[in-house]
Image 1 (cartoon, rainbow, N blue to C red):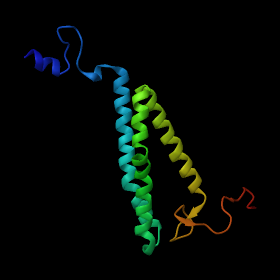
Image 2 (cartoon, one colour):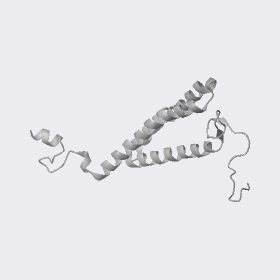
Image 3 (tube, rainbow, N blue to C red):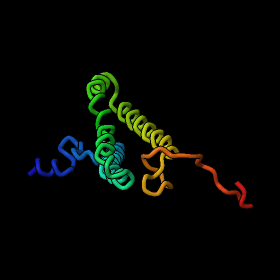
Length: 145
């Protein structure tokens, strides 16, 4: 009976809770990890769908394959290096720096691609086809460019 109560998160005879969610920093880290995992899962589904809708049918398979390779290759290539770093550096610092680097890299790629590609279908929205002509020009209030 005492083991079941301790496993359920109640205080043990020594006065220590075995429930990790009683620690505020752990709860924050856990919820952040869940949010990051959900983001990765959503990205794994939406990127191929985004490419499918914006690339010509004859290039669709190659474009989706290239996107999936670009998503998985860095993790596979850096796994050994990550293990070495994790053995030598404090875990919290590794987690924080990893999330910062991933966020910065993804943001830079999206910003770099946002203005350079146009839709193969309509030619207006961002996509995986090189654009022709100038972009980013907008009309002023008086109607001039």
